[in-house]
Image (cartoon, rainbow, N blue to C red; front, side, top):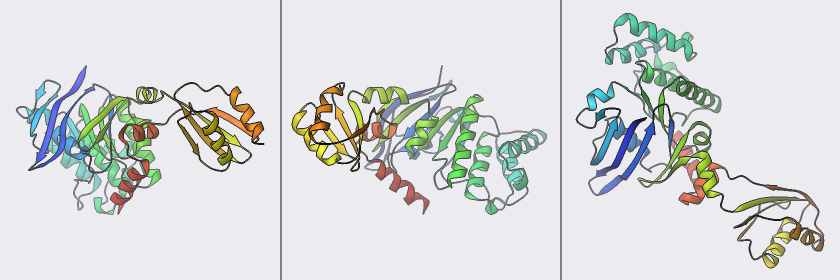
Length: 322
């Protein structure tokens, strides 16, 4: 069953199109990821899906609710964790959670009990009576997620949940997201981190310059991209000499990449049989230690489909940390 149906969604700011005619569906209980560089339209999309930005054209249906006519009703089953925390600096953790719960109409006893439960689940009990401004970035992110789910939403929208926090905190946040999804919460996640999308998401959409380039499960995307064979050779040395020999004697090979003096990768449009290449090693006096088939990573698939190098994504992330 689809919990969210998005059709031909567009957002324009004067003459600039931030999101251009995108369509996708999310299944109930799914962890769906939007993967793309900074400025690709991820946050604009999530803002439209949560009612924080008006739609220029297109439609959104969340369960039985249509936007914008039934937006207020739809927002009762939505949890939102923005890229920047929207909690109050002067309030303590417990107070912030109780305040957020009150916005959803939870009565006092229920919201206080739920706040204590979430502080314990998110390992924040000791910080529950401390002002939010004293929290570390990782703790702030955890409390913001707790605030987003205190009313037990059907779907949780997470905008860059691990950007700008340390590695250990990011790992804990990902574990929390997995646990929430395993317990039945549908999750829509935007991220710069290719490995995060690969490890967390059931399906991933590549979004670039406001347009969805590709949607699929990680395995589907990788399988579709693996229309060529990739074999990695590990030698005692002389990878450059082997590269030249392979290009001269094996025209079927369309890419030979030297990773180091001892490691070389070969891409061909067909399956590679190693036996014809053994002679090349002997002729060039090269010692082969290993030859293994390489399974593409989601990073390699993303680069191939979008043309955006992973290094560019990394610079985006570093820029946002500053």
